[in-house]
Amino acid sequence: MELFDVYPLYDLKPVRGQGAYVYDEQGREYLDFYGGHAVISIGHGHPHYLNRVTDQLQQLAFYSNSIHNDVQKELAHLLGELSGCGDYHLFLCNSGAEANENALKLASFFNGKRKVIAFRKAFHGRTSAAVLVTDNPAIQAPINKGFPVEFLPLNDAGALQASLAQGDVAAVIVEGIQGIGGIYVPDAAFLQQAQRLCREHGAVLILDEIQSGYGRSGRFFAYQYAGIEPDLITVAKGMGNGFPIAGVLIHPKFQAKHGMLGTTFGGNHLACAAGLAVLEVIQKENLVENARRMGGMLMEALKPISEIREIRGQGLMIGLEFDYPTAALRKQLLFEYGVFTGSASNPNIVRLLPALNIGPSEADQFLDRLNKALQHQNAYQTL
Image (spheres, rainbow, N blue to C red):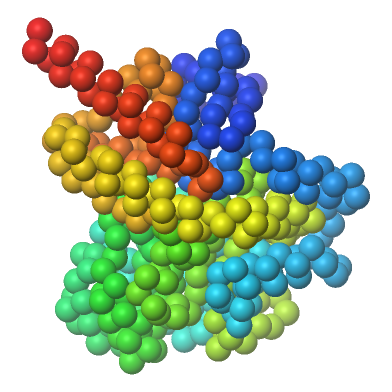
């Protein structure tokens, strides 16, 4: 049997990781400034993470959600403490798309409505409901067209007010920072208006923090810059540092009932051990503050690079927009200078999503290699 060919692949095979670096079969070192879509939050091979997961594996890797699981309770408690969302409840699942599926379902259960408002350039996942609120018709199959969705311009409070005034909206779903769309940050005033309008019209406000959460923005959640209180918050990616785990943080106004939500693998013992390890490292090493500080330093150091038209982001979620498609630049950074970076739906954007514990040395290495790659390109263009 062969793999189903749905991924364009670089001719590269990492076999080992340590800290901010991965290594290929020949032992070549690569600076990882992408973390596999912002998944690697505390670095590759962190010793506390390895010990936590190994210890749990030697005890009990899995049992279903039909029994008591104290590791789930530990995770929920620490997540509430570090995020400032201690009065929320936690539903655990396996992926960001699954988290958004469950959040949309909860919203519709809550108010009995079907319509969802999302935003242009949004990405919320590839499963049935999540993909319908993703602004990319190319990845929506006919079977996904199950409920009405309206895509509005991000930061347009007037358009949001007009749509909510129709009274048929179950939920408004917005990313804390748009990731795949190209690192676009919602205005604080817009998020505040969104919360007010949702409350006024009985809609549920869902904050998708799957990529922007877990300290990446320099706050635990990116929406916290706006000082709001979402109804539902979805998390995944950096939550397990590579182990599949996700969740929905659920405001106490939602009432649970048995059978309302469910999952086979979500919240298993091994996943929760990985999730606890991540939170413990974030807490002990003060990684939220490190992300804020290092992101600020990095964005400031990038400003003098004339080829970059615009720098966007918060913390260590950074987008660099150029005047030309960046595929060749990203490929050159990877194969000639040993740096992983990310793309976006806009081909002119490079995304930077390094681990939250990078320091000045890794930032300087990235800046040096980026400058060399750009100089190389400029020299080639003048020949």
